[in-house]
Length: 465
Image (cartoon, rainbow, N blue to C red; front, side):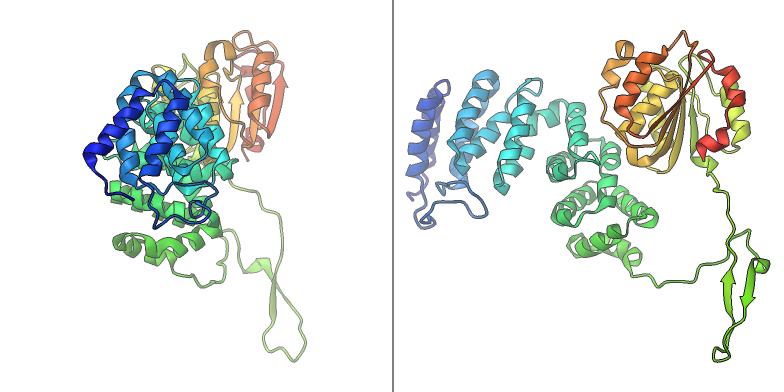
């Protein structure tokens, strides 16, 4: 490999830009440039990148960086041609050409309709770790910076609970945003990744390590709080196992914070329940060889208790926390939450989010417009909701189509809807609901939109149990 002369390299890269609009000519001159800088001391017989099935020129990274720098401005000014050139580079199938293709995707405006389909197809075609990392970081550069809401929606798709095979992509894509110290949306990121950390799949130990380290560097206090919360409340035994395996790769200060929670716990005998006493137990006769009598607990059915502090009622568009249904629910379930919401849908969802936080086991009751709020939150955060109850929910495609482009969820959902509802018609709502909820119970009642008559007849304790 000849020594890299920066002036000569710059001239070669500029020459490539001259053929930007002619992909075949561009590829011809690119091959010549890459061959010129081949490192023959590293060249193998098969010329295949380690851990990959891609051929490689073994070109020094500095050469690719210079080529990308020279292409950047032209690609941004001509996104359509950049996409066409990226396609040709990808099809060339070499490590270096695919890395440049991934770079060109990152110069295309995030509004370009073909950007995400390309990204989706390419990530399924490649196993090379360097190219995959480039696709999840470099290719999303503009989307991450210019349209963070769109970027986070993409991350939610990657990290959807039912798509574990794409979790690695989601984590890799998220790390550059976390590392950006100017990004102030860390609570949203924590909300997205908390279920993934709690699930703690062993196959993603390395990715989880990188994720936690990046979070800790950005905000040590919030990351520590989240991990402690997860370890204290998780019911998944793999969570502690996986965190214990990766803890030595975490910052020492974080290791110290988590050490006590990761210590193996000795099994303690279960204490008596509050409503148990010694009369609940009987002594059975035993054989003489056993010195102590065996105590056998009588079994009797117990009614499950609902934690009212995890029940929330979301009122309708023109309603308040003092409406008839809100007051009736508060009387039936003392301690439940019945907040007020005002403003647009986005403003109301922003008011709801800090109330629910990252806590789990919520029972959400949503009436009319509040039903739309409850639906959107549940579909976006299914692991936080134990049950969803919707009263004549405003799941209307015509008015709220932009909010109803949601992923299907398996959260137990009960909908109560009146046949005489002249505000939110039953049939179109049921059609939407049956597509969104796989665990759906529909209760059709002879009542209007406010469900005043049905409210008195329904056994709400049974529904919310």
